[in-house]
Image (cartoon, rainbow, N blue to C red; front, side, top):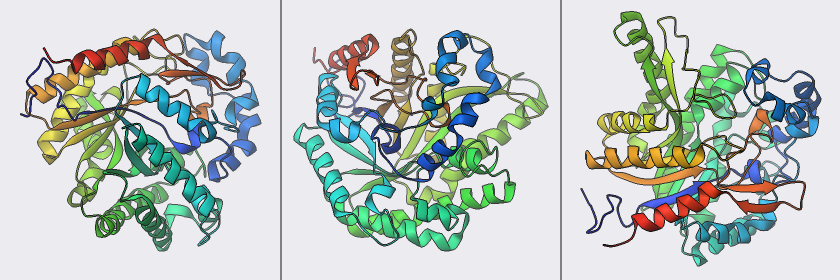
Length: 424
């Protein structure tokens, strides 16, 4: 284990960072999601998810959940224009890395038509990170697609993969000489499930065949993207950011609960990684959930503690999922997302501390853990939930000129990182 000669089990080059996604923070994006928002905002406000009314904070969020404006990304948090001052905040928080997204619809608004102004914007974006000594981690695709790509079927059609390959090649040609790490695809399991299985996200299909096809095509898209990027820059470290859960049996000695648990672990956590394992240099993991399953593949989690979205919170579950991934793949691991919806900033400090402890335990057992990226740097647009869930280390007041305010938990996190890196 490469342990530095200090009180810190983390490597001196460990990536302490935060994450964002282009559509969730930039503002004024025009893609399949922004169209869907405008078409569905009034429906979502008139008929909020029934689960929301059962939340402990329903009285606080009701005015947002029943407001159509909540469901429109609109100006975002204007990160597109405020990125330089946001990068200064990253430095203030003692973070040395930042994961960000490239918005496909900006780069290629029409098929085969490259927007040089937007290409130059992301050049400046990356240069400003480098100027501050912040390692850029580029995420090629985070669920949003150009309208023209959606109109021809998106990832449901194998013949459409060539368009993603062309976009990937353009990204590589423009930016690959400036960066060390690229994430090709964010949470393919979540996208395929919510868009084509549960039908809660655009294009709101409930078709198991389309779900399977999209899931499979995304694995093919990654593998091809990997090859393209390696041809451009063989030194690039390339992977995905897959959502993983610490899936457990509700009754540990019940054979049916154990069988359903094994199935869910394979389907949700490992299937995609196994399809791409020859074409990933690291295992990127987004962790938010510990889920308990019964023999009927029914999820029954403890009722407390829960975050603002009603998700059961067990941050220490990061430890076993890291170990399982290491045992399976024996490749470096990066925690590409990890965070908590917590508008009151009640649980975030605890969540981060427990996550750090989980990572320390994993490293002490020989895991090659390279980085931790908190979700998220800024309060952002949380897809079909809209604006009310608050994941940011930095609070954003969208009613007051997008004013930024560092949360107390983020100040604590900055100090924690500083102390971890002190030599004794």
